Length: 123
Length: 106
Figure 1 (cartoon, each protein chain N blue to C red):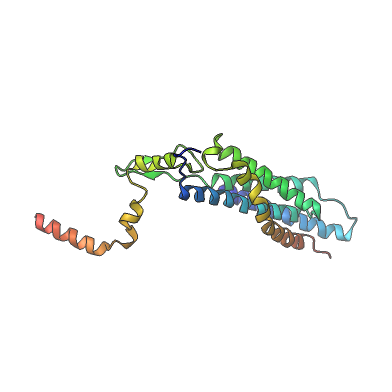
Figure 2 (spheres, one colour):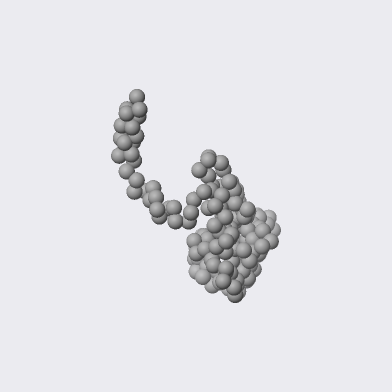
């Protein structure tokens, strides 16, 4: 995010400088773009590209025991099935748990009511 | 081709999306850059091809972590070749827009 902010700031500045230069050049002699604008544009481009690459990092996963595990590969995910299932094995879920459990469809209010009744029974 | 070469489709798609994200941003920024530099005709497209290839090289080195075969089925073709044509319209759009903004006469 910081890379994007710096890069966009530099690009805007370079763009405005180029605009001013052309405006001035149209009244006087026409000259080529100054070197510092060119350098600023290239630096801004490199910063934004670098920022976009660092922004695709894998997010760490949380195991059932509340431990944070990170994958071996920092940016991309391995495509071979044997490698791809390793993280699931560490975390303790299978690839189909997302379909089996359907967290989005769980009725939380009903579950809480059930839990509250269970607590009452325990007392 | 042996039998244990099964692939995870979700991860293939995730990797392609990430590459596409990098190429989207790169092509738009290169469009802005060539607009600011007021490049014309073949020079702009040269900047695009060279810039995108450099960015892909950066992706190949940093994100591939030296074992790019693990993440793409055919790495060179997928990283360096397949994105060049598809991202060109975005580049041309930003190029035209910024060129028109920067080089206003009088």
